[in-house]
Image (cartoon, rainbow, N blue to C red; front, top):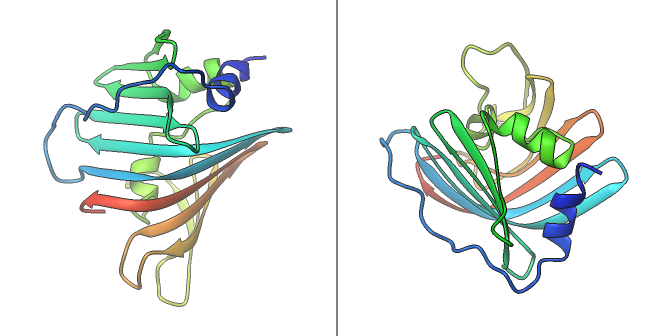
Amino acid sequence: MRSALFWLCLLFAGCAAIDEQPAPAGPMGDAFHLSGRVSVKFGAEAASGKIAWRHDAAGDDLLFSTPLGQGVARIVRRDDLVSLTTSDQKVYRASDVETLTEQMLGWRLPLAGLPDWVRGRAVVGVPAQTRLDGSQRLAELRQSGWLVEFLDYKSENGPPALLRLSRADVEIRLVIDQWSGMP
């Protein structure tokens, strides 16, 4: 039942839309913007769509859209506050993304590790088990209770293009189509 909100928003988005506004600029360094496609399997349920994600030192702004591009949910993290806004402008808040997504969706979005994982690296200072591919790039990572598989890279020295994250009965597949900033 907790996941009903997400699945209804993602699969049955009506005419309401969420404006795609850029996240406030923060300090540069590990800042990036990526866009791509995402699919989530949770138990017997599944959904897919598009993702646009801006990340910087000040926080994150993730916009989830239908496959046709209509915004259905936005997650914004700034400092110690996280909000999830649905296409009908309902806003839900929590102190961290993992708690908010578990409350609203029934599973935890691993945003604490995801900025490093999409760059093809483990989170520094967090225990991890890794396996490298023939090009000495990360092929598999076990960290923070998640198995992250790096299924494809954009180029020999480029960032990952396809990741599969799994934990218990959750599987997230992320196809990264475009990068801006330094991955």
